[in-house]
Length: 215
Image (cartoon, rainbow, N blue to C red; front, side, top):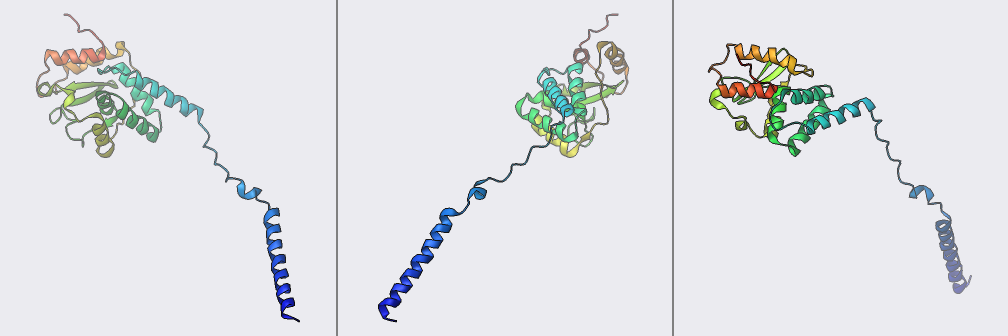
């Protein structure tokens, strides 16, 4: 074979190979590669749980700045009806977006605070939750009559979540008819280190939304 014929044959073979590769490239089906991976469907929504969460959010939004037993107990009832994770998530979000004092009041209802600094004892902290007839009253120490001295709401919630424990009290909605006899028991209960002042008694009547009995 002449040398020129050899080069011609090599060139023809290369042209054939390139042509075959180009043909394969142009005719290849890329449709499968273009399809994105399937998106996982979100977990099914539990309608009952969704309603509970919606009700809890609504009652949290409606909480007054001052502690009122009826409103705060209803919020506590809503949160206690939820799985612990959902309740914690709502509380954390509430602590970020709403008034700090409201968060403190909710924490005082929902957590047992024996191991939390500055709370849980009438002798060592500023404020005490007293539950009589399943009705939670908040009692300020007469010498520390300022709930704002507790840590801010987010800090206090974090303390409760890390050092406290969820209360075993399972609240139920209460009425003024139920609150008055419980409040009278509280006022007559002889466990305060310092007698309650008239100001503190007024605070208790205010949270129960009752007028003092005039004798």
